[in-house]
Image (tube, rainbow, N blue to C red; front, side):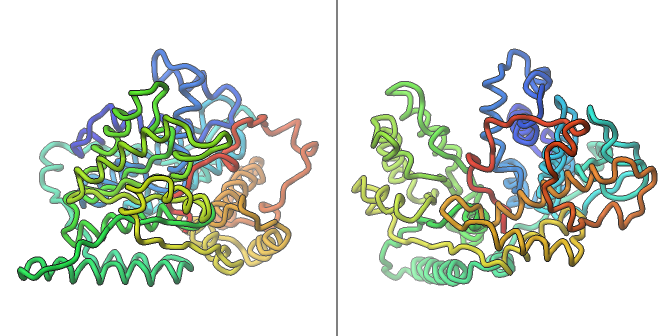
Length: 463
């Protein structure tokens, strides 16, 4: 599918491997099975790939994002191929119910981003070491399992014209449809108005002050920062301020190398890949501070970033994100950063009602329905969950849904011919963690020493 869309096949393969690793990292034996698709790969390669792919559990992948922004005629086919990758991840090692939930939500995120409807299946059951997760029959599979997509002939592909890129108004409408984020929406609308007038003044030959387009996003995890950054990239392109409008999302590990001197090259390569679009740096403060204070590797990355921002100032926007206080220290750590990042947008935590709306939206995107009792149970869970800096906000809602989908599949394991309602409906009991000893003899379990709940990056799509 990547080849048909004009994307380099190694890029798509690396993306697929990362997505599969992120979905299956809690499954015993998954690294060995995963390595069979990547000759020479090690266990460390598996977990490194999982770290890179975690952000795609609830958001479109990097390649799919570019295809959507470009209005590619192949975006739906590529999203469907990613959904098949999510399904395949359920066969790695001995999948747990958590893997099933991860795969279902990830598949739905890819399909939704491309504007594709959830795919149906009439195939047989999805098998794991514990037996079939889903009885045969029509209806949506909990793990996002999809049938094979027939390849188009070259003639058929040539007949399909690319879709027109979205307008500023359409992208702003998408922003306004997001749950919550009232302050963010107001600030983005204000930024758009200012940049639009600046562009019109320049076209009219009038003098106009240089307005810094780079942004600082501050807020707790799961508050929609990546989602908004993706929309901003499209808005800037629609305004004619960027030539491509792609979003490249990275963190410290993708900017800093293992040896001095290599970091500058690595950072410059990442920035080059974002040229024409938006470079989104999550937890950017980790470049200038940490448990042991600032380090020379991080400073080298920041110095290179500042230089690249100046060299590419006409066709690059950088958005840095993280917790409020550490981000203030990050901007103040380098004079070049302070002069380039003058606009800060704060992302508030979600209320209980907003989190319930997010959970409902995620479920609908995956073709599930939360019955009223399940929503009541979710509100009860929210009521006893601490809201400290580690609370995941929208990510918390997604994790709850992923776990519920796994329990839903396990609940139906002995139902030979479930009805469509049974296949779709999430019950209150699916949101309740069962005692370990009640399923220890049946469900494959894993000790997950790399819990994504504690370490994963900011997720797009959590709003």
